[in-house]
Image (tube, protein in one colour):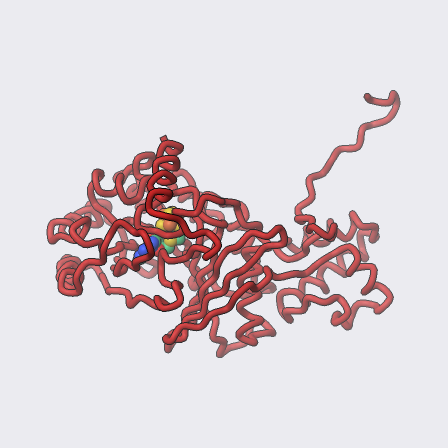
Length: 394
Ligand code: SAH
Ligand code: SF4
């Protein structure tokens, strides 16, 4: 009921997620949002602005997660801050290292959700494969993550938190120095990033911020299975490199293996690629193509791929990914000779089509193998789940 003469207070939605222990999480907030949180807790506007700037610096440039280490903030205020705010990382449940140096972490959120993150070291770069969701609402037939029932969007804190955790593990604080191992980020872990657009955008903005984690947008790639209505916005508002999980060149096959194709078809998807802001010959769109035996790997498929890329005049390169098997998967990987032949045809069409070497297979860290071990299912359960998810897609 409104009290005459009074104006009802307007509830302002808070940007910070409040943790189970009641503290507000500061990771994943912009500097301005941190300032607003500090004001909300009672600091005056000038003090809040200064503190926000200092705290931001400690979080993103120094990797500090304990207020008592913030030496330019008065000691007397450390306890006050620590009671109200947290600077956290996802909890590490398990960390594994592959014989090829690839590392995988099983992570847990504050509310007990499990997700994974992978680091792939190469001679000239180190790539962190970041998750955007716990599980995935889509159900690509060759992808283990797609068989997870439980799905929740990760928050910006949990997405940025993965990058910060990787920096912790690699001993790479402070930010902005040369010679670091972690040089590239791919949004290719669990989940469909364009189904969690705002959180992914806000997280990547912090990752790209020159005052924040300071990774160049040229070193960040977002991979989508083809959420056409969000692609233009992704280009405009995030501006990172685009990768598209194409995997098939006919409606029939793509409908089967990448079911979102029933909603947004091939031609629509390729048109959205042609319209993607910022793509050009220097910044090509990557088409990912998983090689599935007798499914999508014929000479005709390779020629059709070239024809489609030319038809839409796409500045494109193709990544041929040997299928990584998982228990219960319905496909096999194409033979090495077949993959080589496919690659040659695409190359002959003037399009780069390297074959990717699978990494971290021995620890289930390779593309499409991510699925928390707490969630293994039988083939019959997988089929039932696939039907449910496809029915939901309409
Ligand atoms: N959801 C997004 C990003 C995560 S998947 C997307 O689909 O693009 C990252 C890449 O791994 C995608 O190209 C995906 O199709 C591919 N992939 C999934 N399962 C795979 C498997 N079993 N073997 C090889 N690649 C796979
Ligand atoms: Fe989801 Fe990508 Fe796996 Fe498809 S390939 S189920 S979109 S994570």
